[in-house]
Structures are given as C-alpha cells and as structure tokens.
Length: 73
Image 1 (cartoon, helix red, strand yellow):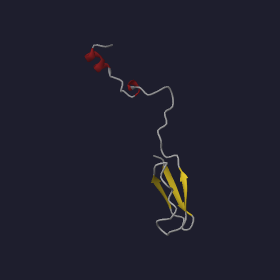
Image 2 (cartoon, rainbow, N blue to C red):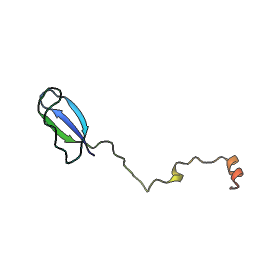
Image 3 (spheres, rainbow, N blue to C red):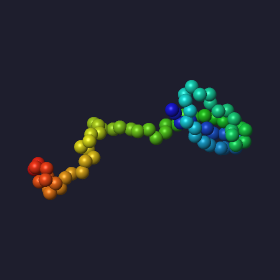
Image 4 (tube, helix red, strand yellow):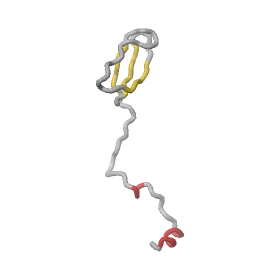
C-alpha cells in the first residue's frame, strides 16, 4: 500500500496516511475542515544493490580454535 502525504492548503497541517491506490483521496482537513492536497511519497522501501545477499555475507569468521574443533583448516 502506498503512503500518501496530505497537506492542508488552509491551516498548513501535514500528515501521512496508508491507503489503497483505489481508495478515494481525502478532501477535507480533519483539523480545520479546509482543502487537502494529496501527494504520493516514496516511503522507506528496501533497496537491493550489488550482486546479492547471501548467508555467508554476514557470518562471523571463525577463530583458529573453532576451526580445529570442526576439523576444517
């Protein structure tokens, strides 16, 4: 669902609202009853960059003691 930012042209009130794309836009300010303008904002979506994310990218490197316990060297 997109995040819509509303701005009242009369009192300057600003607020965000999660709505479906098919929902009607609000037209009346809940604070003063003035006219609202609606903008679609980008939000804070996840951006994946690079070649990918793998389990090994974030694993801690084992110490020499741990390597000996596992039988790997």
